[in-house]
Image (cartoon, rainbow, N blue to C red; front, top):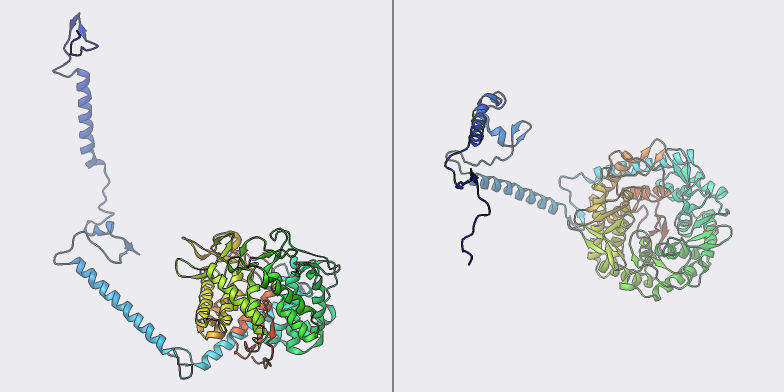
Length: 600
């Protein structure tokens, strides 16, 4: 049997005799190794005394706390938390005492702010009592100066256009030559002239107005063979001319408006009556943009014709214009609204919605505006428009109105059942729209507050940039609040929508901050957009010295400068009781109202 004890597999022998495995002394080689290790240890320990640098001249030993306690400008600052308190010192008690003092200061500041707020509340038939604020005469003088500054900006913009680009659509202020965007085709139609005329009139720049009027009478022609945007031609040309007619009664403005509107009518020749986006001025052939959900009509474009066409029918006695926009209204009334929303695309042949994308910014914006303003324009008679507006806003409130992580209200986009937490600069008009539409709504206080909240968000988008001007679009997510994150959204092209909301909120609330915010915008435009030969858009609002895009947009004269001027003017200048603005800021008269507008 095998033994239960394991036998070693190897055995050392010396001269044939087995050698035991254990030894009682080290070999010579091992002794050398132990000695070297010991010698190295001794060298390291004692060598440091001779080779380490002397730091006593560099760090005073009597102030060693400088090594461990953070410094501020070379002096110990802030609160110092020691590991060991000094004798007789209770660190926690001292910290509590400091916190109580700080809390008391905060409480006192809150109390003062509350007292100031109460002191500024409206009393005695809504007359404000100003405490530590400029008196009425000082405010009037300040507003007059601000108004004159905006007037100077308008005259400068117009004069530079007249010098370098007269008759062209827009000015390239750096290149000092004319510019024409694709929306105007390839024709020089004098868009800046027609767009800016009513602003000149409101500001009392009558020599400039007369020069523009004479050009309209002798040179404004829509005879070329180029394609033209129906939407842009309506809001800029037809709208601008109709306002000048309403201001002056000059028949040349009415006749030219009719001439241009007639050029647009072939675009309405579709099975549904929903017009195409593009019309050829010579042939009348029409089509849609290929990129628009496979060539469909755009909500904001065919939904932004009612004010101008209704007024045209009124002053001409020809119902054809009103009939066209009424047919559009009927289609939109009867069609199903998915989730109570109006998508941005509609097929003009079938009357069916295209891509399920809803936005109160680009592609959708002014459709909602015109529902409300059609009701206002009619003097409250067009109740169908008001009902459609209220229903549309309810849908937007339910699906698109959001609150950011820091409490900012904004309208997101809605695409195929999902929210995109982005807000266009174009959507900043909605603050003013909601405020304007609060009167006559089911809950005036709520919608006025929504308008104020949206306007506040858009001001924040401006305030969070280096240029203090708003980006083309801004986003909201876990890390971003009212800021652009994409380079192609950081530009500013002299857009008016935010200052438009300032204007409405000022008129409706008389809160001074809206005038102050408007003045911030004036200063930012002067600092970053003014050139030697006009105003230009900028490419990156987050850059303190942004590059310019070299375009003075016609709507800068028609809208941005007009709303800024009116923000600092008396309420009687374009009274909201008598006038309603089209989406290009051209005022049209409210039915049954008589204007006493001109006084600034």
